[in-house]
Image (cartoon, rainbow, N blue to C red; front, side, top):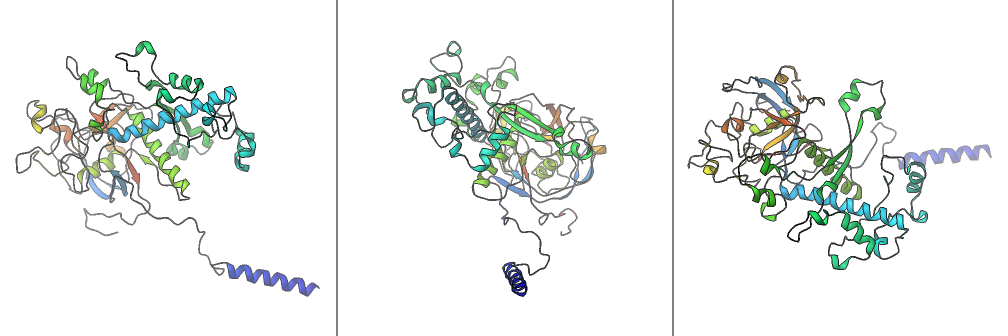
Length: 458
């Protein structure tokens, strides 16, 4: 009998070995297969070394961009500035999510069930325990109500369509929630009642990895912060940026009207741009999860070095993204949207902004890296930062320094600010009619990292 059990054990061992594909060798743990995918609307900027800073005379004597050789890793960058249409997708997602949560909360308060008509259609999906998975039941029993928001973590119903036509509202509860999303009746005029944009807040968490790496005696949670950002652009910038100037049509129409859908979004401060990056990451990875695919790297604002490297388009020592030093092509047309000559805004065929893909792109297929709108980057402005930043993937972002770098110049700037090496700044909580942004995403791996300047292969 003992020999019989030994034979069974040996047989089981042999069977298990045959089922294993590694034959007892060290072949590494296997995860989901990774398929590199170029993000939609982005271009790959191959990493390498370049001379960062002003190669020409600093005619304004700021002396904040001395030349030095730095190296950046490969990354994807938006081919254009984020447009009104793209940012509206973010706004509408926040609006719809806010509305669905309000509907679910009221349904919970009045005891409406998911199988009932009316507001019950929008009730939390986890209200019935028998409908929960084992994981959902465990999380509900152990973590429900422990967050800052009592309803945090509960599942809202995204499958049923929201109803916007007032004649089709299903009941008074639905009507009550919809009414709470709009500005008060006394603030409406000409019979138009719009969404109360102060209700459109996006909440996300972020972790200061650099601080955590330098303070290993603290707990992980000490470096995680909850951010709540009102994400609607400040459309009043078109009025406030220009005293004694008539720009009301831009204030009224620029962000929401489809005529401006492909124009760059403005009136977005640095904090709102960061929130957009967090939402874009979450939105993409929700799709990845639904398809059982690996998560992608997070979208973010570019570092100052990444922005300048991309703006140069592989041209060393160039003054502008197209080379330079000229600002017109051989046909006498301006190469960017800015304030040329002696303040003649329309000399370049545009009074304000132009479409995000106007003018020719640089050699990395990036549009409007000079002019149109200046762009937020993930860096704090310090006049001497070039003196102490690393030469590898340099980044100087101080949380206590609220002066954030903007690059590229805009439609209302003189040509100096269009130079790829020119630096400017604005405060993180300030929005302007001439500042927008574009995002980047880290490239997975190092296969495309080249040093073209020195002509050496990877």
